[in-house]
Length: 451
Length: 174
Image (cartoon, rainbow over all chains, first blue to last red; front, side):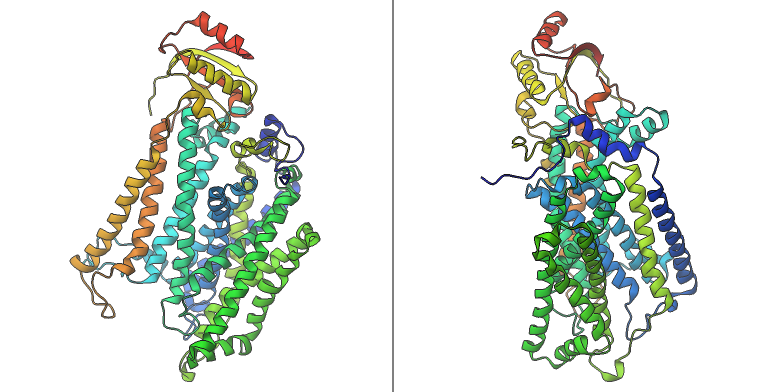
């Protein structure tokens, strides 16, 4: 039998595990964290001001206009939703596959999911142009007939998919933290912390009967989240695929989008985990190089999958014999936005192939740089899909370029401010690794823990 | 939720093996209402304490079916009955297009009611429940036998806990 590498380094005792993981919650923040937090918060404030300007002046501030009715907001929405998917994949699907290594990264990946979905969720709401009327998106009894929403529209499916996804992933994340909140509560020396975490823990006490129900619920939520996460990006891809536009109207979109989402999400997990490892050196014993290596392998594999999807799209465009389809794809690679297509291909397909080398898979600086490339490439993938299809459709008189403005840039950059502010706060307020889940796997690789 | 806490005897153990052995023994002694308190789910504890498989999956299934049918009812009633609109010549009751809604509502109802079921089953949320020892959510384990359990006898229980290697034995409310 092949020997397993330890999941937790340094022969930790149960007490040490608690102390290590709870330390960021119980100690004062370091200068590094404060610096990062203040910068992220500045960016967040800048983002809020930008959004306020866009909402008060109108969507005309952005480059969206005929024929490019969808622009930065939709591109960045798909980008952030995709990022979120890796978190659910790690926490739910890898849990169902009994991948024990997922334990130490699951909590933070799920946090990433929740914050990414929050960041993403704003975009379609603001993209309506009149966000104060967004309640029209939901089927509620009204005095206009009642005029109901159109349930045949993929955009409405998206409303249901994204709001269900946001709700279920938040609940899943919170339920996972309840026992850990109880741990912090019972350790608390000061009254405020005891009260706050006492409320958050819901009075959890960890009796065998409770754990039995709890584990069952966790399994159920994992089982429900797994098809949910696949459905969400499938439905996001339907927003495009159900239309008749060449370049969008393809059956490959659902699996292609899901693979891309997992790819980009793992890219983001690696980016964030390198930061977490630098910020909290003690976490290196929990988020080990082995963990990072496994995630890099997934990045490489899913990178090949999206590469296959890119190739397959071209093949089908040619094989279909449809002149519009062919024209769109030739234009995509060689037209006005050809550069963005090649940025996408190099970042998503070529650069991750470096992970074939073990040295590179296990080098923190190199994997950090590659993960940034993956993030850039995946944003450009959505840009390519949205803009190159819209700007060059059936009629030459209907062609036009996307008039990118500084507000587009501000919104794209600012959204990172929102995400990072939430994420940095999370690292200090919530236990960033699941204490109750890591304890049962602490002996894996030391000849024990073969549950 | 108002829960009445019961007085009884508690023993603290230091290791996972000790608590499993103790749980087995306490069950063998014929106690019915005892509970084991652990910082994480200990493998084999359900068998040791004789805990039945959780009933939450039934809630998940029934509410999933309910969510799915309410999704169907909602889309059918709004699109085909209450205010039918001709959209692109599609049938009023265009079931394939309603599947995403039905699916999402299945997941939503099933997930949220399973969580509600956990709250009910575990009596959550509790306001400031008594705890036997603060380390029980960190690195220690305990067995609690309430006073109203069959064959409750403090002297006998204390002896048994001592024989099992308990590091501390005390009267507690839980």
